[in-house]
Image (tube, rainbow over all chains, first blue to last red; front, side, top):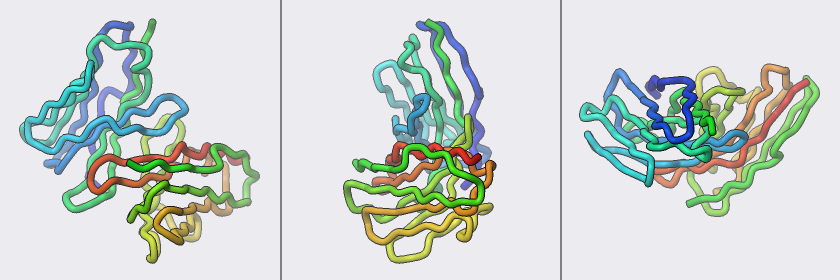
Length: 111
Length: 113
């Protein structure tokens, strides 16, 4: 599938600070998903966005899908040590079940 | 939802040998996916396995190196053949509930020495 660029690669924040990771594509995406992988763990699904301009919230996490459906972001408000892990965006082409993952953003939270 | 039991969870293998990884799903699923995740890297799709047909491999992965079996709708195996240190990685099986979320096994951490 088409590649998506995910930035930053790493982010170190003080506990309580906010965090944002971005996922960008050169072409229009059918959908975008976000996963969290804790150290030593496997990816766990967080959310799927499919509509232009869509915004979804899960407690301190806010997910956005751009109007042009070419970019997405995950924002965490007031990070906690439990937020530590790598956050991946992923997408599948229209009619496809295969997911293509971004390179991920590794979040470290300093207590 | 789907719960996937993957084993072994980790192994240390001698170069030149083969390792078979098993994944058991708690429900019947059409497609299963096998990924490789090198240390600190993203997930790379190795192949898609449908029951009753040969697996479809992604560019850079071949059946002779990564043979896959899919004998029924709840089970699949991936074999890493003739291993070299470059095969040291995490191997993950996965399935999807339609075109929504993907579920993953716990992963197999393989070290080849």
